[in-house]
Image (cartoon, rainbow, N blue to C red):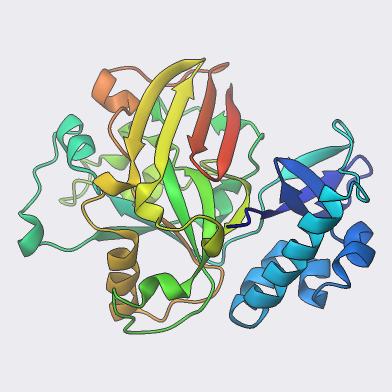
Length: 309
């Protein structure tokens, strides 16, 4: 199985460009046209445009990637020089859906009482798409936030839209995956001024509360998403270490559930829940200067430092 990814980077002059990723090295798409025998116009434009047309362009993109791999093996292509670019979020999601309490151990550390799985369904809410930030960007701790927390999650990118998608066919609608950190204000997810006790949108939708990246890895490069390992370190100390196989509702089941409510669209992002080990469960929270490093096996890692507003 050939592994490759698609990334977005910013040049030192401020221009954003799409690139291939092989062995964590970036190769500019435009500069590699000769080696690939051409590339889809959408890919030459942006990673987001490619994902928007993934149903049609996925196979062509994979074929281009295979030619890229051959050219790299022959040493006829050189990667971008380190220090010559800044890595950006691979694309801008059209909508961000997030699944709450989707790991038993995480629910337990949060004191959440779950119904039996057979009597339940995924609990999914919307997180503002404006929370998305780059894999190396600063996460801004707002003045009114006291208990800032981390949550490493497998981000699922929809490539083929649809309604009433079956769980059996759901993964066919996935374009690929990213690492996602669902940064959360624990104090602002709780409310006492209404009878509704939780406000997931408020606690999770501040600008910069959605670090994403480091790049977009196509579905066929990873195989079964439920086998992936997720980790998160704070200041070099391991806080989270779990497997997507521990999810209560699988990636496919979450897609099927969402599609019963609405028509999913290419570019939609689903943050599929976090394993145990968040700050709330440990009684510790992020402060200015702390560095989060979130990683998922087969995808990569993103590192974000917290700064005060």
